[in-house]
View 1 (cartoon, rainbow, N blue to C red):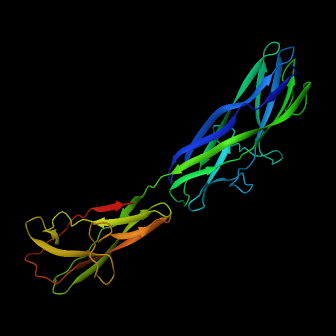
View 2: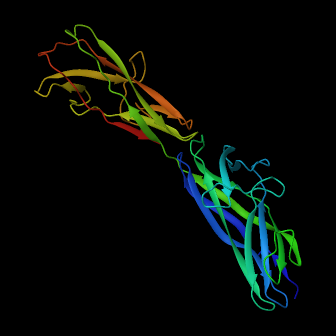
Length: 300
């Protein structure tokens, strides 16, 4: 049997669950099975990887697609665990991924493993859901010799060849994760009288994936009497107040999603909701510092 190498399988890589913080992953599988001749044979192989069907020829970055929205997720593939050596096509000027194998004895086979290292960078504006790319075609150049390894994948040794590898897909799931980053205090300030209403605003900042529907609810606070929100001075005295979703202060802000919550759709970037507060005119029995704590609930 003549010395030769061929592809025994296909490349695949799953990034698993991805969030806005990005993720790294790796995949190992067989790159080549090589057959010796009448003597022990030393094989040197170079692996190159082209762009898939969603990357439009780009290697930096490559891209997966979310078919319902056509949103594309950037990702990178490398030949090293430090993720500094990008994998690219033949002639693209990218670092060569070189692997060696030896088939000991006459007419024996050796299978060479291949590990590919991936990264999805952080900070992408994405829709939640499944992303995938296929048809990354790999090319392997190899040379062989019987007295040692060839000097390269295309020179040295006594012979060699080329073969291609296939890909069964690169995939990831971008999770429908939302988070509140800040909720500022609603400070009505210092007053000497509440003969007239006192208005003030605060803000809630959140982030959700692109296209994700969200709802913000505010409970009635820690000192409410039924549905009446109240601040207390800690001595059994109260000032009542209200929170609204609109500047006209006509839409009460409650905690029932879809009824009196503040609703929106994620953009993949930070979004701000304004809380419109009002202390209506009322009599106050004693001076002091009055406060309440309101719980914010984000539903998505």
